[in-house]
Length: 386
Image (cartoon, rainbow, N blue to C red; front, side):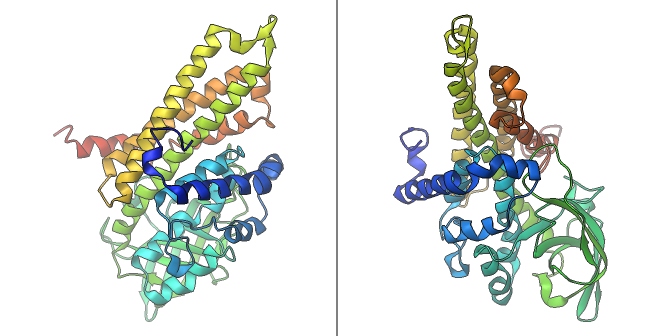
């Protein structure tokens, strides 16, 4: 991939070495178990420590807290390499820290950062982000979980839904309402496992991303110390919007990476599968379908890399990342669908990588803000409807 002229300008030797390490880890620690973990709908907790020991967890996070000190492309390469195992669930489980820790790093005091970040980056603890609620998805200004100040504590009441790594999380970065202002009344708190009044459901049953645990979190008169608030009251919304850009880019990366893996699997199968006395690659309809899949995957990856590079330079990319996410969703859905069709009956079997990818990519237009919300943001930024 580093020979691709569309990719090469964004990467250097450190990225190449890191990618090879990620591929080795994927090949040795994930691929042999991917199907079993998908069926079990969980992967071993020990995988976090193994990934940390391999230098893969938090590769783009500050070295001062145990991260790798790399850039956004180190994280992208971790996602791309991991997708070759054909299980998005393992990746998002390992990667839940990538959306849970940024609010701590952005808003936390030095004591808070050193308390909560290093254990996660060492793989000793699991971190999750608690934003989505049963009646509040993309419209985060409607968050109803409340944190009421009571002396030197806050009392949390409410619930969170569809929380990745929620079942096993040791810490959860929770968005809660501290005043009635739709945007200015939101604040972040860190809630630790075992806090009285904090409980989690068993893992939710999902269409895809099966190897990741997903939970409902419930707060019933959950009392947490004021020291667990991140930043001042009312700083949560802005921090979340910044976090969303990173999350949406990662979802876009899952899109192009899933398309690349589905394409490679479809190319392999088309060469091996014979019909009417020749490989199905010999039929023009197959070749043209693969050509379109390759074009879409490459265009999607090129756009995502351009957006990531602008983000690395500190530029504002709100419109661009929304567009990249939507395009990646469309590409992933189409390419994975074509891959299943090329596989035929085998593409419908659960042991097939393309079947898993087909299920997994269906979440991309929903997670991190729906495609409809992305279009609304783009339209607003471009001044449509005024």
